[in-house]
Length: 174
Image 1 (cartoon, rainbow, N blue to C red):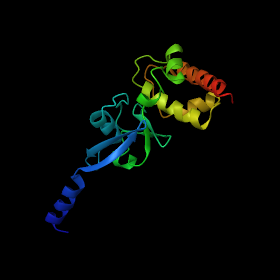
Image 2: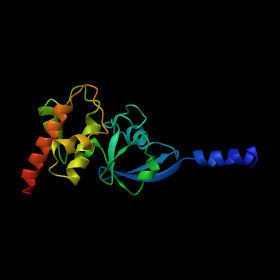
Image 3: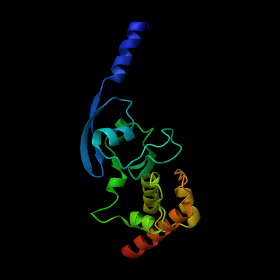
Image 4: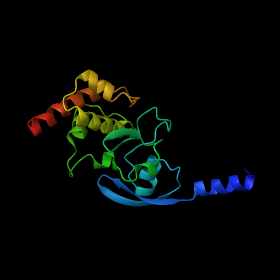
């Protein structure tokens, strides 16, 4: 292949694409380069800055969001891959102006210190409780294992998720 052909293919690969993302049940039209990470699109194009950029290498979990209910590191997930899928961020966790029980109990248990890991922790905990409404403490730790907290608030975070599981379970009557 000639250099000219290679360069033309590269130009096509960088050409912006337009699509719609469904984030927190709201459709957002976006135009991005094909290689744009979901994290960048959420923060810079849509304006949802609750999701944090930590390591930018899928190691810390600060950027965790849910795609079709599954936790993903949005720093390495292509935004275009999310087209046609349901993306949930920390901004969509509460159903109203009141905090979601996970959010409130994390505050009450002292699980929030600097707060940088909090959005990712909350989204991972939400995914865990959606698939297992009554997890053991070990299951909570495993469910949150992709999220790092540099302030070492793990015991408080696990306690908050346990309390949220109990509260959510009792409010649904299951």
